[in-house]
Image (cartoon, rainbow, N blue to C red; front, side, top):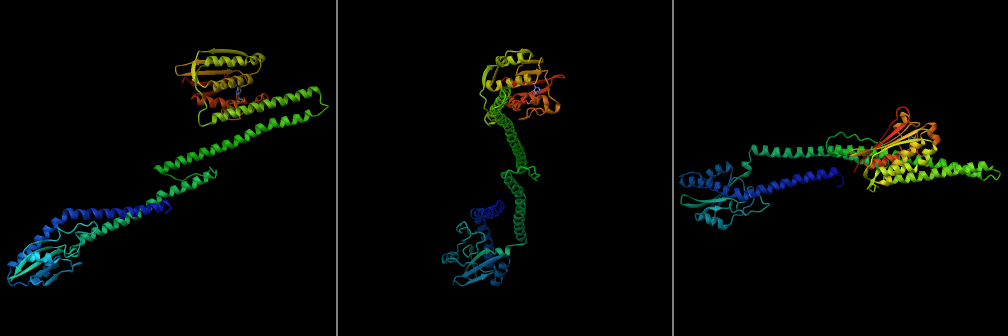
Length: 459
Ligand code: ADP
């Protein structure tokens, strides 16, 4: 039985049969332990009153009397001292009364076959239609000794109420079985739909939507599956876009290098052109090298396990060091720099955080025209530090502002394009800041330039 539906039905039937057997066994055990004795006493009383009536009566038709009693719901067996036997009422299924039991009653003792019926698990005590499962009493009539054996005739005793109850149980059993079939089908339908959807995801098709509107666990599973599929689809789109961006960004410098290398092969090339072509090759090679380093860095940041190696260090010292490294550019572009730096000891990965400050500062330097101004602030609060890097450079238009943290995104204006870059720096910055459980924001600096604000918790 492979399908869940088949298993469900099989289990239901097994459970119904199992509970039926269990109910039978417990009722039968209860009869053997509890009711058997009481039944024996009750029936002995009835038999005794019949015997007393016959013994005390004169000139009655005993056969007729016993027939009437049998018709009232009993099976009777009468043996006289000459072992002449007579049955009244329906016959017994098994006539297994022992010789000894007959002798015992003819000798004046009562026989308690009901009480002494052996307790067998699968033998129905109450219903066991045997001559041995009777009570026996002696009586005398017209000077002759008799033994009277009696047990209720179960078939006659079965009244309309019993049939009604039996019918009710049967209807209940059939109705519950049919309802289980419908419920099982309804329960399993969404699972079948989910299975089909997982197969689609397995084939990298992330576009399907599930039509499962339920509030229960299966509904929750379907919802989570839908969210997961959408995420996978989004990741798949990003991955494909990323690969195409990477190939494009590698392709253009490689084409430039190839083209200028071919030009360099011209023996009659002027010295100035040769130097200029070699410079293009050099700068394109540097660009490729930077691109490779940044891609490697991004890959390490993308790992599931955080690559951070957290240490305690002086953030103010690190910032000063980065500024020192790029001071020559400040001088070259005649940029003014103002700083307000608090002393901060923080927990973080100094190597990755250095990349953050380097990127933000080099961007400010790159995108600010000669003679511009840059401001750097490091402010310490109780639970966090705030680093602000502002410039009054070319600024970022509103449309680009929302996208500058995207991988490979570069503002589409001619000034940015002239300056050159990979479009990976800010996505690295954002990822490092997020890994430190911090945040980064960008805004216009008045009507000229840009402000980047990084907030980091002091871990
Ligand atoms: P890039 O290598 O191009 O500088 P980034 O990811 O560092 O890549 O920056 C993405 C884009 O954001 C840049 O191409 C530029 O358009 C814009 N940008 C970043 N910083 C500044 C800034 N300080 N002033 C103006 N534009 C900026």
